[in-house]
Image 1: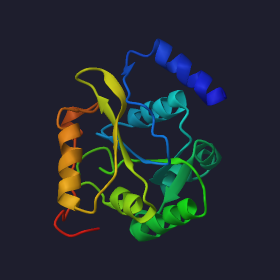
Image 2: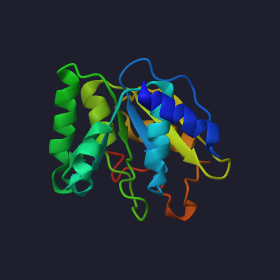
Image 3: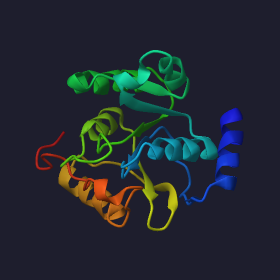
Length: 191
């Protein structure tokens, strides 16, 4: 209840406009892209809370150190050791198969810019769990943010990524110069 009230207040006073297709009706991997600023996190939480989507999110382990740990976990955070990405995918798949219901917010471009490719964990998690992918976005050029379509991945990595690229083609992020093109390192090999 409190998160929805906070989100309602945020959207009332924000200079951003929330535009969204209907929230997914089943657990989904929620992509947050382009991820070019720490403010993307605030916007994605505000979107999820406003739409009543229970979310979990992946964050680098250092965000959970010290006094921040309990806060980050209370906000739905799952710490990630970047040197063991496969373990993270396995852990999320186990949670879903155990019946935990949530939307998983993932920023596949990894850090806030400077990468050549998106990380493929979102794709592997979606395929292993049968979860669809919901395309969340931030677009500074229109000052809009929200959720785009929810799509089921087919296993045709290049074809699926073409659909994702088409959606994000006109989305700039808060810092457009840090945007990473939605492309996996090897789209020809199934994840």
